Amino acid sequence: MKKTNTRDLTLMAVLTALSVVLAYIHVPTPTGYLTLLDVGIYFTAYYLGSKSRAIVGGLSGFLIDLLLGYPQYMFHSLIAHGAQGFFAG
Image 1 (spheres, rainbow, N blue to C red):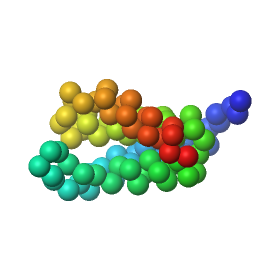
Image 2 (cartoon, one colour):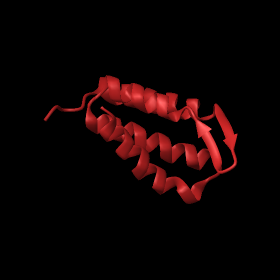
Image 3 (cartoon, rainbow, N blue to C red):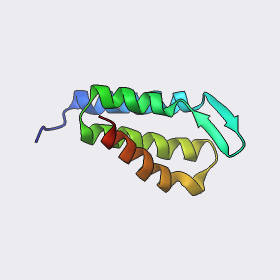
Image 4 (tube, rainbow, N blue to C red):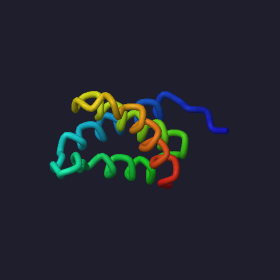
């Protein structure tokens, strides 16, 4: 198993922040909103390993719901976007 080093942790933090910023570019729909969060998750899936993809996907989904005012969906997004990141690559 590959050991996570400082470079990987820093890259995961930057990609999580990028995904959260991309989520602020959103299109309102009748059932909620559509964001560019998936772009950040799929870029991470292309660039990093499965554990890192799951962490970035889960944390960015969690933080987006917290910051955009949907706290009731935070844990759902943590699981859903974490799984999306894990299986994307």
